Image (tube, rainbow, N blue to C red; front, top):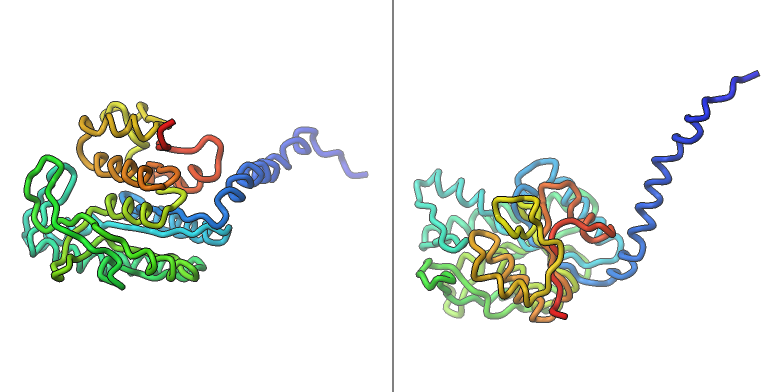
Length: 299
């Protein structure tokens, strides 16, 4: 006669499947809410450089498409641009979180972002089961840019601010493909500009009236104290963010400014999440706890 299995085995065996089912049920109302909605994702930081994180990001984006969302990816490629500039002995300088860009810098940025980084992302998404199309601001006159200065007023060269986003280009592509947009563009006279990817993502989200704008970065979120990773602001109104902007420096400033501009332009929510955490995109979108900082309209 077979022996009776230990009582603890009966209790513990179904724990993992039940936990998985609970997670799926937790995600269900979010999937229902987001079905058919557009989410603009600014892809950057470690999620673009770590091999395993790149694979997970591509799978997450493909999943969003499969559950009925319309993901649009906007990317930079700061570390790769810096690497190639250093190989070419070109000076690397930042002001207020923005790269100072002479004509040579813009040429390198365009080659790296459009010719390499963009195509690497497209190929990765394609391989995980959804067709992606690579674009930059020059394609279909997607971005019309103008020269800008740093927030402090300093001249930073051929750095552009986006005057116009041609929504028709993106909506047409997004019907059947996942758009992957490199953050470069040109003005009316054909001059090329390096465009901060955070600002580009905000402009795209605003033009599309996206439901959500999400930034993948290398910090846990917006920190009250930049040196304290535990001081994450889990949620804030856009009015509070706008008031705090003057005291924010480095790369977080253009992200927060993009969040403010996007929400004031009709985007429902903006999120800053830690791209070093596997599946942080899905954790923020589809779980009750979330992950990172959520910025909402003023009450």
